[in-house]
Image: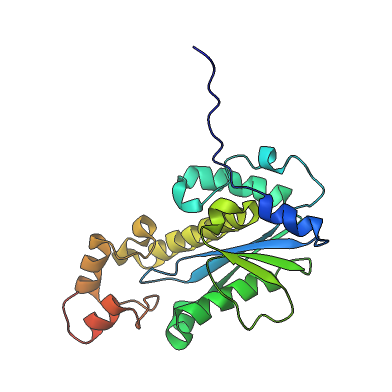
Length: 220
């Protein structure tokens, strides 16, 4: 039986390569996690990979959409990403900021904080399915399923996910009633049951329907 090579699950580099060919050197992928949760921050990762290495997909083999990976895989690859990247950073917007500004502006705030924390000045951004209309000083490209199409975006997705999950585990230790370490703030049956029993914590997003409805005495 002939050997059949398993298809690579590593995200591609075509978008980065196109930018590099056009003279952009500091191409930064940005992605976020936690937009749909009922509690905790929305967190963004930013990753700039080196343009002068031809082994990136080998060194970062397996880097892809963080939602398709196990926690152990994400944590292992996060270390490889940090060691390989020219610069990387993570930024967040709190649940209070989400309630104050709305989830999309708060997501852009987290992305901007991640970008500002980089040690380099990006000259092009690759984003996953979000528009950043007031970003005037850096050109960008937003693409559907960017964390599958761009290695930089996928790497940013992993760093954001690992960072936010770690925060939610710490939160679980401080506020144990909600089992945050298990569901990371998403609206699971267990989480909704805890909300009904204990009410919302300071980390819950009061403008999100299940939490808002509970506060106004409606069924969650």
